[in-house]
Image 1 (cartoon, one colour):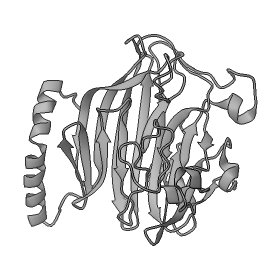
Image 2 (cartoon, rainbow, N blue to C red; image 1 turned 120 degrees about the vertical axis):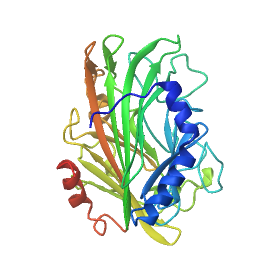
Image 3 (cartoon, rainbow, N blue to C red; image 1 turned 30 degrees about the vertical axis):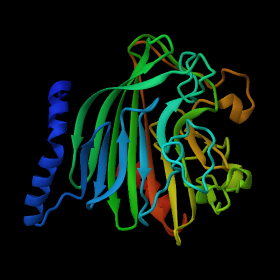
Image 4 (cartoon, helix red, strand yellow; image 1 turned 90 degrees about the vertical axis):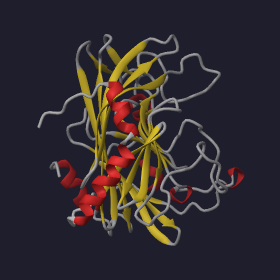
Length: 335
């Protein structure tokens, strides 16, 4: 069935009644033995995603420089991403205020920095919510929206359509995150910088190193990528996937991130730091491979578009117990 775009006013009115509508639908489905597994409901400036009645994540479409997913609750029932700066929690480093849980953006788009949020920079842009296209609940939940990328002069640099699909199994929770960048205002160049792009800032236990001066003493993470690099050697390497795991709240849990084979420049490079930042970045070639600046520039011609697809798997166990390679093959095959 073809999707229809919802007028903004009608969609906002619909959002106001979503809790009631979802509640009635869930009750009817329960009676039929087919309760919705994933429910998406409205909450002011965010959409709350519930799995089997428990909060999994919230899509914040307003209130920040960019849309973010926060919190992200793992299969063990605890958070998988850093709380700062949305909330201050003891034991977390309060650095890199722009590392907000889980997000997509880039540090140089037509000369505008959409990655950092320094008040001292005159080049910082923002990604602003435009409209909702679809919100669905059921065996999976999905959120489809459009956004505008706006430079410091309040000019639209480009637009995007992004679709986020959430699913779960007994031992994992999955986010499929697809972004299509539209060169709607003219040529768009994603510049050659390591500061990007599909990013997550993890729970401090998933860090590879402690930072006592910043209050972090619980780091116990391990990491590996599809090419066999481990721990600190992941930074700047190309790989189909990466996986990080560590004990959190008494259970070993992890997060794997998959780069889809259809993505431009697959397999991507990874801006994967030992302090909990993991970024899939197809553009920062001069940083990652010490090549001349501009080598990684990626142009989308006026009127054209480019799509980037990723999957986050929040899993129990380590990389082998979670069968990450097999899960990646499923993702690559469209499952």
